[in-house]
Length: 292
Image: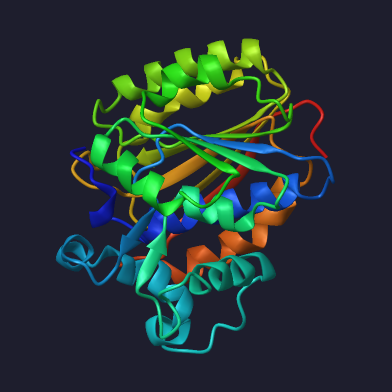
């Protein structure tokens, strides 16, 4: 995947990823103690949906735009969004620049910062110099956010455990190395869990062929964590290596009742984001020794 996120911002895969991220941060905020969000592949932080890149693909029209105007895509009234999706969508629309409609789409760093409290913090890693420079400009007045122009996998060695001793690591690489990226993620997670065994780790992954994903999910099942939750959304059958058919998030050390928080939002996304055929979704515990 030759991947520059500006072309894909706000698409169906982003909607799934950021809905799960929003749910995770809401779960972390349930306790009063501070937490840290660490993003290993942060990108530039914000994307113009009316820009040349997004305009070339128009992928957001089958993603975030469908949550704004659900009836236009379904041909019938589909009812209100589940509260978690409604609150997440409201946070996107509250971004400066979106006063007159959806023009800007916040990436994971900006969404996390918008949901965090004053006492929480974020560590953002981005290897690409231009993207890192945009991140610094975006957050130059936010003392909670720290930008690192370096390899995010390697940065985990220095950043874990965070001083807050509580929080989330988001691993969202571009998968330019295709299946080999999973082996890199596995090595990074193995080392990270040794340094910070109680941290929450959320990994986004693309779904083209199911056979490409299964070895990684089996690795998660044998990773030694006590809880691992999988959330997936497929807009096409997972049987073609030539296109993005769906995406998933697997959450290691998932917060208690995260599955309950995500079930209705996923059900709604399955209805709203269907394309040529009905979308399918999966939500299950890969490991649930102590899951609620």
